[in-house]
Amino acid sequence: MNTFEHGNHLRRFFRRSFRTLSEKHVQNLVIDVRVNGGGDATNSTLLTRYIIDKDFKVADSLYALRRHSKYDKYIENSFLYRLLMDVVSSRRSDGKYHFGYFERHYFSPKKNNHFKGKTYILTGGNSFSATTLFVSCIMQQDNVTVIGEETGGGAYGNTAWLIPDATLPETKVRFRLPLFRLVIDKNYPKTGRGVIPEVESKPTVDAIRRSVDFKLEKAMELIKAGSQPAPKEKISNAN
Image 1 (cartoon, one colour):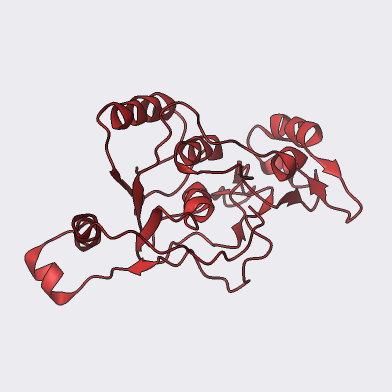
Image 2 (image 1 turned 90 degrees about the vertical axis):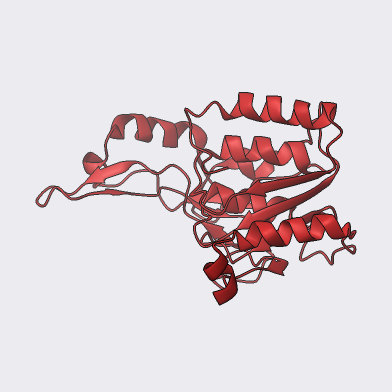
């Protein structure tokens, strides 16, 4: 699963894939998000719904410090972004502009073709943004095991929400400018770290010499062992 971006027909792919898993009574699922830089949180949320076993929120808080600034003119499609900010955000007592829908709304697990078997998620340093939302949301589940290396995306939160392109007036340098700050779980330690896998699997000299996929090898080892993960100690119940 290399992206959650628009235009990849992911909704159809998820629907067909989980229907096939159900029809074939598959009991073990490996999801590889090691090079998934993120994308549309709608897609990552949909994938989460096929696996998670309880209602969940995408974020504890999602807010901007201001709706508009004198630099808006350097943002591509600035009128549309200004309009969107006016529509989706409202000022709260803390003086910040909150995207309240995602702070309040709980998503439910999928009823059709919901996967109840064991899920193994492969992560790495190139797992960012919506990928971190997906992994963080389901990793506390007893039938889910995260394997690999720490994600590049932060476990506490990120700024990967509404990211228009901006162009500097003199140099014409183009860059992406996040408009919102997202806190995934307010009770998660503010360590500045990514999501730490439950089963660490790093490259070794032997793995490199044999040109093997050491993370997938670890997942297959756990599947063949058929071990049932022990109940997990919950980091928090915010989500």
